[in-house]
View 1 (cartoon, protein in one colour):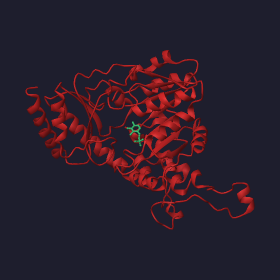
View 2 (cartoon, helix red, strand yellow; view 1 turned 60 degrees about the vertical axis):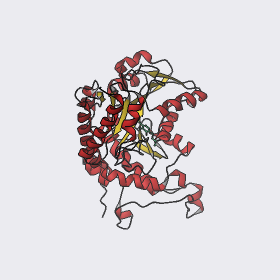
View 3 (cartoon, rainbow, N blue to C red; view 1 turned 90 degrees about the vertical axis):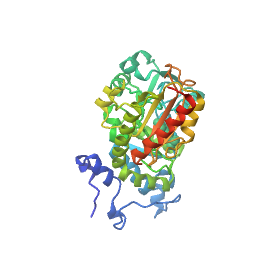
View 4 (tube, rainbow, N blue to C red; view 1 turned 135 degrees about the vertical axis):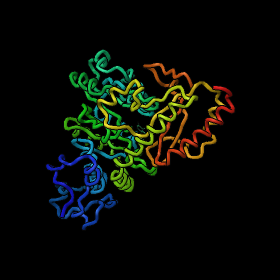
Length: 399
Ligand SMILES: *Cc1c(COP(=O)(O)O)cnc(C)c1O
């Protein structure tokens, strides 16, 4: 018996069902529910004719295994992609997506609110290979037309933006970019394809840092790059030429995470909104940057294009001395201070975008903190932050 729907019938299943059933066929695994970890480099060919013609579903470890097929097929199914490749990190997924789309002499447009290491890759690596990058205001919308040059081959979008959560009108941008024959690349890590189906909305190449919500456990590093039919052959070839394959153990863990990702995301959204509203009402907080809040400037776009929110957002505090901010952060009991996010645990980090944004000015009006809301009881999380605000006021005085 095969529990995996036949390819032609898959689309009739809802996303929650696909998360559970995609990418596994117990009938091929002696009835075991999950596809196991295939570790391997050499794949043996049974005959001279087979090896001469590279015949067989698998030919070498770097060219795919049943484990990588299971993960990538499942992701293509969930993301609505023609194909997906798995890389050892989210940043590697980004660099492969960019390398697949661009050649020497091309021009690239990147949102000013893109993940910072993406910028560094563009400025330091792509520049060395003759690709020039220009940063643009994430709110540009159809106005991207004015920034497109004769040689603009790709436009990178990320919504909401890293750290500052600006929303982008991706369908409007995609329409302009496609009319010019260029490629839309999206970092879709915040929403995952469950909350924003990238390829349905005009994205050609979509990136997911599987390190975050796909893992859900802060215990692995992984990236996924998916493409529509137009860009899939080029992405697949580029991936194999760079040979940046993900580790089998991490791919297995990512598949395990996939089965519960929908459930976890709903809880991160609910808990995140609860905490965001609570923070909004605090006298120490100037502003909450969360597109699912009706007051957020990006709310209309979020509501139109996204079906939900994840648990990551930022706040702007009223101006306080640095020592007050340190007192707030240093005594937190439940919120960890560290990079990455998407696990079961809550996090809080200070950030400052002023040194690296170039197309826009970031003037928040106070210190900024990014929160990831985990699966703890929110009453405990509020008590932890409440104690933090008391420490902050002790140092800062009246706010
Ligand atoms: C974390 C992150 C990445 C990179 O993922 P890594 O696996 O840490 O390399 C890329 N984009 C966004 C938006 C991220 O938050």
